[in-house]
Length: 96
Image (cartoon, rainbow, N blue to C red; front, side, top):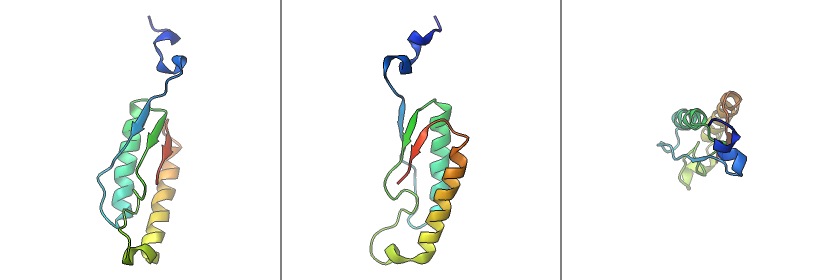
């Protein structure tokens, strides 16, 4: 039987992906790549939503890195890449 009965969505359930990418501190380009890889996996596995950790793109530690313009600019560029790539993916991405 392949009808709607066998779809989790027809019963009010949602497939969610909780994603924890391997990240490097203050390396938004690397972290963006890891985030997108997991977002693509979530899409392939038909997740409706994919949740990523807070500060996952910048992965900065507090103190000196917090106010670095270079880190902020690279993080913004990473988020823009994620937004662009997400247009081709199924799940809603919640990226911190």
